[in-house]
Length: 495
Image 1: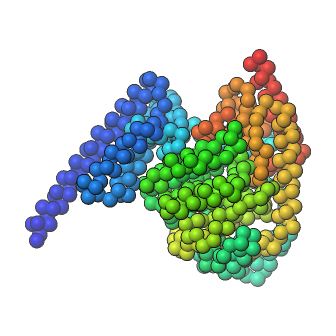
Image 2: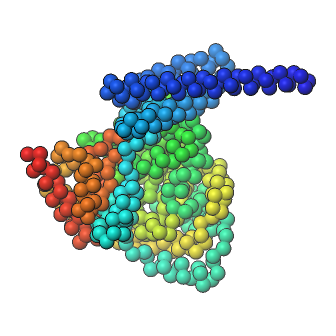
Image 3: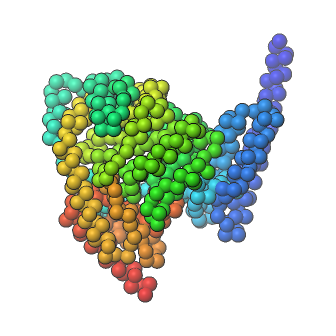
């Protein structure tokens, strides 16, 4: 038996060596394809080529008795590595990869992307730069970051003090204290006519970590997700980090940010495991209508695909909002939220996930236990108090609404186009004068105003800026004065 085993292991070794040599050759061809595209001024994104290659390779699976799902994941890993190689080559040549996706000439265009975009500037990047300027003594109006900057409810402050006085500062179970999970479930059931129990809720350190855990517990490297854009940059960042391929579904201002469900159907392949949606939307403020959400849910159910719904801005909905939880007992839906926006508890770092899938909750709980044990116990009692601070949350929402109205009124006198938000805390405005957008963002920052560049929310939104309501109306007015002045100077130069 020993000789036979040694011979088989030698075969495995030889075949693996062959695979590595072929991988090296494949990456070299990918580099050459990137050079040809750059030389001819072609986009490095090609949806048709990738789909054709994928179809051809998957067609071989039945003949070779290979599992299609396994091969699909390998293909996505190969595409992602080719993306990395070509982007590195572009960077060396002094040019960022435009459009984000590259694989050996076979990465999709508008709907498919390996998630990378060398020129993508996230809101946090601008925030960091603004902080550096502030350390030199400059005054910056922060209209780039998604922080309400409102007073926390008095109950929340007192609950934190009481928890410390009562010695509530120890480890808790990883999913969170039972009282908080039960209260969250009760609140969601009452608000959305859901049917959740405390065991279908997990408390996390912020909404971002909730998204991360939900994706990590539900997806494997090489899987694919559909992200509806414009979108919060963290979805793509997380997908990249865990080796998941992104297919982008772009929406447009001209269409009122409505989702094209026909396009959604067309970009879903057998390797897509999840659709990620966010309403009220960051950055547009759009709220999806019931009929469209019904169709999205039907598509996901028919293809056995999960829906991850980020509803962190639900407290800031200014028209009818339908939660994914209203589709009762659907174990393929995951809702994420936090206490950062409505109660304005950003620095407390506490969020939660609710899903009818206890398997997902348990998976998230195991991961959270490994990574950080649990959310700090006093913070959990603060969140419990926030759930009974409905009047404070409603008051905060009205303040945000007033700020949004102010921004919209002022933008009407500027060369921009925008959708009046249905909710959330931003206005996503398209700049309608010809200018270098990076220079515009830098000029605004040098003039004391920080805004978020649109390309951080998707490759189709280079002409947009996101304006946040994270400062009071006096500072908002001052910041909008600066934006107007800068745009007028840009317009006059063009004339």
